Amino acid sequence: MTQVTIFDELKRIKDDFFDSKYFHRTTDPDTSKEAVNKTSIKGQCEDILNAIKSLNTPFTALDLADYSGIDYYIIQRRLSTLQRKGHIERTGEVRDKKGVWRLC
Image 1 (cartoon, rainbow, N blue to C red):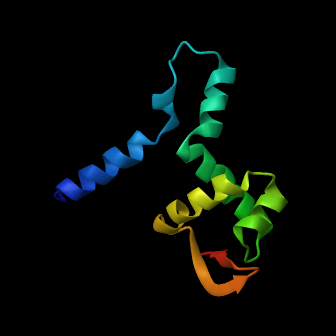
Image 2 (image 1 turned 180 degrees about the vertical axis):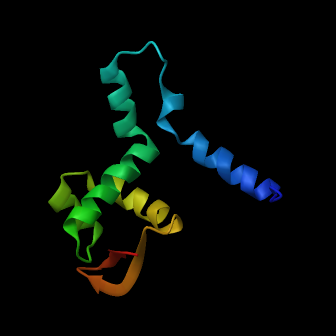
């Protein structure tokens, strides 16, 4: 049996906090639930990660915004989240004064 530390529990709570199911009522119509998924941090990260996977090449935030149609500023805010979760990493390259990223 593994012992759960307070840090494990805090991480679980933090991950649950950003789950979109907490941002709407169960009685809300489906369109409201879809809107919450698009505006929640988790939903934005999922959309960005899917776009990165389909792009399948090193990219800047601007490249990804042009490719996916997702707002550039939303992408900028979520890249560090995706990096912390181990999905993407910086290449060390700079293109048009912007950092270049790639899938891990």
